[in-house]
Length: 274
Ligand SMILES: NC(=O)c1ccc[n+]([C@@H]2O[C@H](COP(=O)([O-])OP(=O)(O)OC[C@H]3O[C@@H](n4cnc5c(N)ncnc54)[C@H](OP(=O)(O)O)[C@@H]3O)[C@@H](O)[C@H]2O)c1
Picture 1 (cartoon, helix red, strand yellow):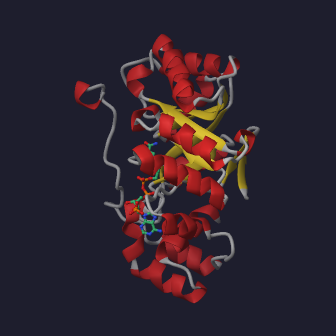
Picture 2 (cartoon, rainbow, N blue to C red):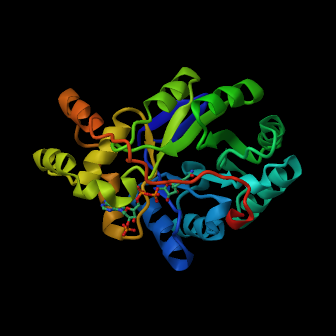
């Protein structure tokens, strides 16, 4: 297993994303992923599947200490007391005494970041999370968060894939020694029909999705692709036995386009999203 190292955290370069995996499917996919060798699972309180993620973890028989478990606090719970309660509820659902990484899921413009980070720091200091970090933070917010947090922030989890230029946020993470965790790393499946990724894949006997994921991990970016299919779990994991050339990396980097973002959302505090 290869890792991204950031401020004392060793994050496995590939993890299983679990957004939208529900019930028995979620238990099965987490169990199967761990049996196949995955050692990193990404969930969130908002996904409503933390109980199933914990169940899959126990079903796999893999030692808890070998698995890197991430969950996230929803921004409606960013007031300090709510955040502490949310972290405890996540642990109760997962049936774990601590998570490896606890993230602020989206920025919340309605609650002072200093207050939220103070609570996140306390949760870490109380031993409920081994590491803490953020998600969907812009360059300006990363800079502010790093200044306000006394405990190290180990990552920003953001949308990253070849069709979106995230170079500025990635540079800010690197400048602060933070890892980049790529969500929607195969652009919600969009990578599979891309001509360039398919052409390069043919040279290595790999699929377009594998080339897409390889492009990211080869830059030290952590990927958390999600699938509900056993064969794709294997496919997405088999990305460490080939190396893209510098020319191929440059060509894939050129696929970024203005409308490449697949997640078009920002938390406004509107009750519709709570
Ligand atoms: N922090 C945040 O705000 C945030 C936002 C979005 C996502 N995330 C996290 O990131 C994870 C991944 O992102 P995502 O779920 O948005 O998108 P993704 O992983 O880029 O794409 C998932 C989609 O691609 C398909 N797929 C998976 N492997 C494939 C392959 N090898 N070839 C072709 N299609 C494939 C899946 O369908 P099948 O099930 O049919 O395989 C699914 O429809 C999430 O599950 C979640 O854990 C975090």
